[in-house]
Length: 424
Ligand SMILES: NC(=O)c1ccc[n+]([C@@H]2O[C@H](COP(=O)([O-])OP(=O)(O)OC[C@H]3O[C@@H](n4cnc5c(N)ncnc54)[C@H](O)[C@@H]3O)[C@@H](O)[C@H]2O)c1
Image 1 (tube, helix red, strand yellow):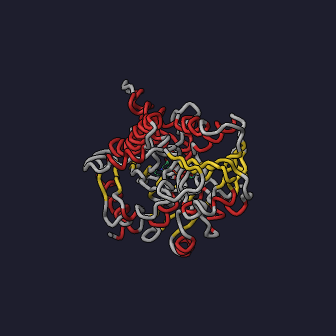
Image 2 (cartoon, helix red, strand yellow):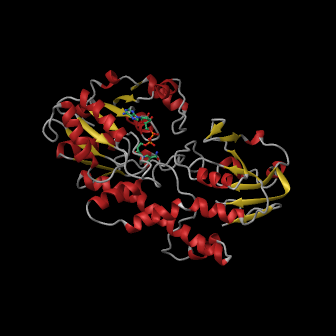
Image 3 (cartoon, helix red, strand yellow):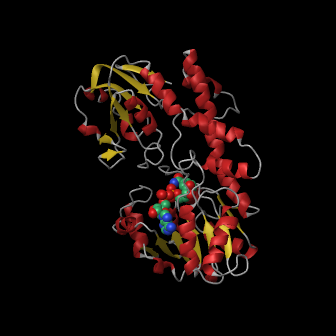
């Protein structure tokens, strides 16, 4: 890489699931400042502790000893040339895009940036946010002009928490910019961490759209399988048996039923739907998928309770939004728990990834804290790796002899069962 690019100082704004791994990778070639408003997060990262489990301690410590500086002070990013923004983009209670984190980040960068700064966004948004929303705030705050004094880029992130195979260096990175020269610089910078595996999108809006449709497509495909699951359950057949058969066709797409939570798949389609409505297109398929997936917790809850006659002690295995991660944001397991509690059942959570003792008013237990011979029903909601080896033998310890098992993941369907096993 040429010396001029190598000398660029990069600021990463927001050090969560997306920002931290990016900061570590970039620091192998560049001077990087990782900035996060959460001073507690900075404190623990400086000790080598990443509570998102995305970066191991050794890599973090090595980066901190070389080119990576971490701070919660705005001054730390003062002399940076390139600002990469990786802050959350959630939805409001009404499922509308909540751009306040982006707004705050733009206000911070706007105060600090100089002429020729490049500001790149990685947060998932609907087409138009980078230029029409963020660009305007940056102009106002800095007094500089977009496309003349500073330049914008958008590069969606494809990180898959808990997935140690599809890491940044192994996937194609889509990049875009509002000027040729900026695109060239981004190609070199991002190319340095992806072994040159870069796709240059035609425009920033194209890159923004590409990301939000990836996650919307996944949401819709899962919604279809969830709907088929409902049909299968009422037919008295297993969706997994049906999928096993259908999957033998060369062009059948393998999607599986389940609860769709988290801050990406369950959120991003609302961003697309919002923009779609703004430009006069009714997003029927997108919103119908969302509705189907959002209603699955209640559907599963009702189906499970069909098997129970009296008030029961229910154990939930897994409450994070997906397997092998500590992230509980927007986890639909809590909708299921609330539904079961509303029917006056006692519900306990066991989740090896959740460090808090209580979450959303529920006690969280570790496997070794569960009482002997206590529960009437076990629901496997999230297939964490720790649960795989303990079924059925060790599970017998804390379940009553007459207990039921409801496996919402299908993970145990091929095991030997000595409790009453049910799956989808
Ligand atoms: N996590 C994923 O799997 C994933 C994958 C692809 C894309 N994305 C997208 O990337 C973006 C970030 O997601 P995430 O999961 O990393 O979020 P996160 O919540 O894990 O991390 C965001 C970080 O930004 C910090 N922050 C918030 N406002 C800030 C500000 N004004 N200045 C500096 N720091 C600030 C927070 O303290 C937090 O540490 C979102 O738009 C998300 O949709 C996430």
